[in-house]
Length: 320
Image (cartoon, rainbow, N blue to C red; front, side):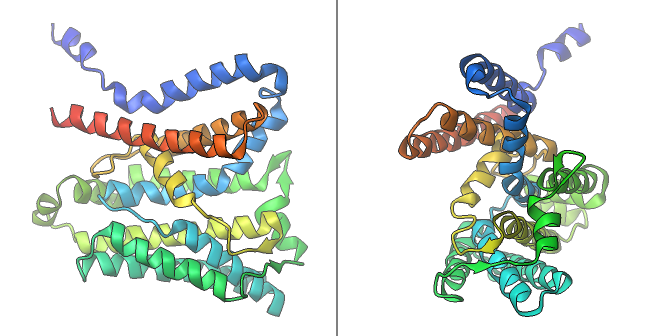
């Protein structure tokens, strides 16, 4: 009798992203199979195009599971790409470019964390303001001019290269997800993130330094966004202020579709990967279907609404 009851109480919301993913994949395979959707080259291309969003989504799980939100990730990718390009142009040092780029992302993330924890600003408004500052700085630093990258090694290792036929962008994505899954599922920090987002007061009484947890989560988000900016720059072989424009919404949608509640307390790193690839698959499908850019934008908006709706429904079931 107890077995029957447990069987009926399967939490389908945890598997929703996988069900949607398989359903959408089969649908596109049937409708767009004759347009090359199932070609291995096209499927690899989907993974390559979503690599930057996927990497940012890893840290996005930590931030949102802690009950916060980070709108700066798109702007950080743009500014990092500009800084990396300028450093490479001036010194041709890959190591220095990486230190400057990732260091910048960590500083922005730490500032976001301090604004939220020390000044008690709402995360949405704090990161919105930081986003505008960073995006404006990316435009101002070269007066909106692109900065070309001539270092072929940098571009190969972080953007356009491949190993055993697998693009390096995909390999970097796999590495970041391995790291993210290990930290979130196997380390104490992952449990502290969930506790902070689930019930901060209870977490504090349990001895968890929730201020530290939030600052680390935001710093991690900035670092991952910075690496995404490095991938953008290497793939396009130039730094541009426009990189990552709107990516913050795509990251949020991917994370929420993957099963992370916007209110915090729950999260899934591997789910965020499926959410990211799902969105990339939809973008690829509308292109293959020859839809206009306006229609593509409308579909993207619909995906975001779907993501938030799924999050709200899941949270209601949890509360009930």
